[in-house]
Length: 47
Image 1 (cartoon, rainbow, N blue to C red):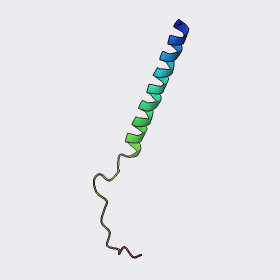
Image 2 (tube, rainbow, N blue to C red):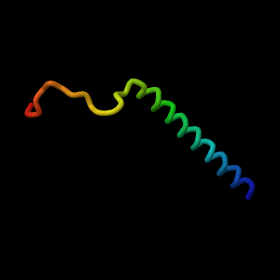
Image 3 (cartoon, helix red, strand yellow):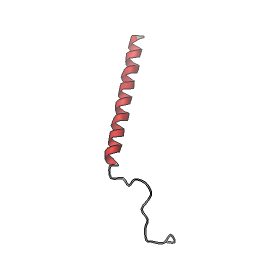
Image 4 (cartoon, one colour):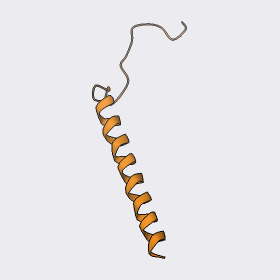
């Protein structure tokens, strides 16, 4: 039983580390993302 709990806690720690790394990567890769509404263009919608 102790081995199973150790295994589950290890898997939880790995999962948490992966999610944290993905969150940091997303934050750094989208640093220059436009916030809010889209930019308006001078082109017509028919093109």
